[in-house]
Every structure is written in C-alpha cells, then in structure tokens.
Image 1: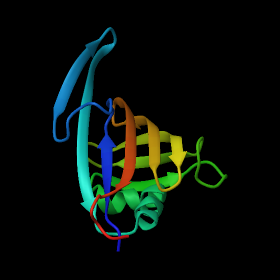
Image 2: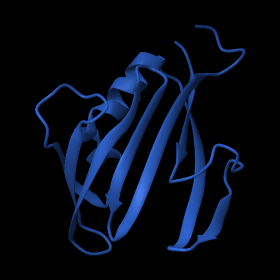
Image 3: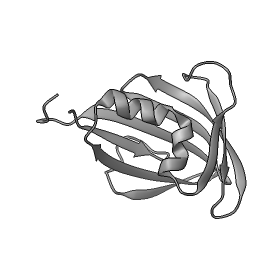
Image 4: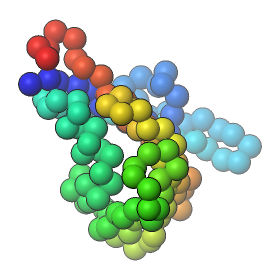
Amino acid sequence: MSALVATLHEPGPKGVPVGWLAVSQTRSGAILHFVKVVDVERPVEDVYAYLADFENVTSRNYAIALTEKTSDEPVGVGTTCRQVRTLPSRSEESFEVTVYETHRSLGLSGTLGPFAAELEYHLELLSGVPG
C-alpha cells in the first residue's frame, strides 16, 4: 500500500504554509488562501480516480447535495460540472477542470457559493513509505 499527500489550495500560491489562512488584498477585493494537507494510505491511482470523479464531492463535503458533469467528453482539461450547495443556503455552482495531470495534479476554477474560486489538488508519495 502506498501513501500520499493531497494538498488543497483554495485558491492560493504554493508558498502558503500548511494549515495557514492568509488574506491578500487586490483591486477587486480580498483573496483567501488556504492550504490543507491530508495523508491517505491508499495507492495514488485510487486517490486520483476518487478526486477526479466529481460525483464523489457529496461524500466528502456535507454542504454539497449534487455534483454532475455538464460536458460530454471524458474528464480532462475543459470538463465542466455543476453542483448544488445546501449550506449556508441553497445555491447552484459551476466549475471547470483547468489542470489534469493523471495521478499528480487536478485543478478546478469556478464558483463556490457567491465566490470565484480556484482549487488545486497535488498528490505526492510520502517519503519512507513502501510502494
């Protein structure tokens, strides 16, 4: 069994330290940067497949009732999806896949509630863990 680290940037530069919340100001408003690292003791292929199947969002985010693809092609850069959020209030969101590097990185850009958002998942094998 392999272990990996999935790093989530919502949105944010790769330089924001893990567990930190940083706010930067731009002409159009504040930007929230958040980094979260999760160690998962599963093969990297399984974790990537789980993340790239967007219908799984509802199993890891209790605020989302539905996520579905709105484009016909297989998941890759340009794939579009819509989702229905129930918390804090009911709303519909949309996002597009902007990065698709199999078993390595997955990037999304779209709306989360009333906010424009970019999310990045980066998968890495943990050092010292047998493959």
